[in-house]
Amino acid sequence: MVKVKEARASWLASVFGLIALYALGIVTPLATIDSYLGSINVANLLQAIFALLAIFFFNDSVRQLANVPILSWTYYAPLLSIPIMITCFVLIEDKAPTAADFIFPRMGQLATASYSGTYMFALLFTVLRLVYMLRHKARGLLAVFSTGMLLVAVGCACHLAYVALFHFTPWDELALTIGSWFYRLFYLGLSVTAASWLVLFIWKQFPRLHLLMGDALWLTAMRIKFSVNRSRFKPVWDFFNETLEDGIYKSLIDVHNRERASLMTFSEPIQSRIRKIEAKLNAQI
Image (cartoon, rainbow, N blue to C red; front, side, top):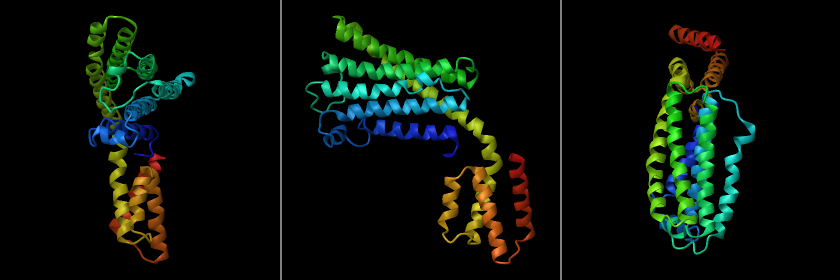
């Protein structure tokens, strides 16, 4: 599944998302993580960057799954916010000590408002870009996905409103009230999008998995049983490192080569299974 084009983007999203979650201090205390980075809340910057990358690649995975072409001029636009975020973060004064609520006490600084606002605007842009691309295909699960994305977008808009009101107006209470909706809408929307994407991906890939997974596992076991390769780890490595079709094709070649090299003949049940797999593979091609 790693070799499937849209799955590669989802794996990248998962890796970046896990790093972003780790930077929150869920597994290792936030102060410990940040201590290795100078104890000036660099962990907050890393969390924002990796979260943005996770959502970027997650959205790209869904775009590929829905066969939506890239709008080239907007594709990499959200990533341009990363150097801006880094620059604004550097300009924030008194970044120590490490704190989970790093942004709020420093919102009076223009650099902090710019840092937080740029991050949220990049997320909002990424989400709305995908919703726009899916506008003609938003049916069924994709409609659920788009709804989740819209909730995320509203959450980001709430945070942007909070930043603008809190920094540029005296309406601090109103800003805090609007900003409090960010986490509720953001994580609710993200949960809806993740669940609908997972169902959509499994629904699309299940016919292939159901048709070919058993054959791939059987051939891998055959390669191990008859010592087709010098290393017994190679069949297992090929199983994870190749697409199902490529892995089956490669395993069939290795099994046939072993049969010829050792001048052995497989039993009729094994030969019959191999012929069925070959016919199935030819039908797929």
